Amino acid sequence: MKKTNTGTRERLQLSNPQKVFWPEEGDTKLDLARFYAETFAKWKPYVEDRLLWLERCPDGMKGECFYQKEKPLCLRLQQGSSGGRRAGLGA
Image 1: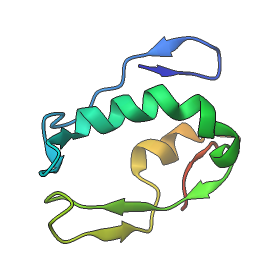
Image 2: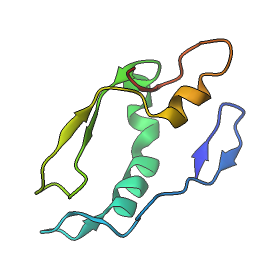
Image 3: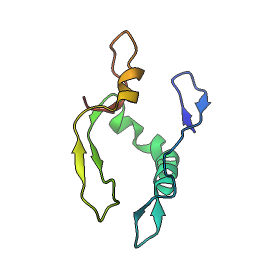
Image 4: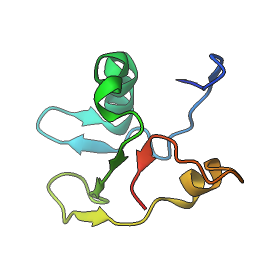
């Protein structure tokens, strides 16, 4: 679950949560999401209101990776009509 700007929590849905990202350790996409949820409070001041890039590895860390250069549509829709940016991926 993620905390929203209003202080409430909403459930985050992951596609393919059992996808293995690191085969040697057996860590999955769900493991990574849980790690982010548990540690976000500590690194939030360093990333909040900053544009970030996203490295995507559709076939896992051993497969071919690429940098996503556009903000995903779901994050673009979150900007709202005011056009203000939220912490997220760079456009």
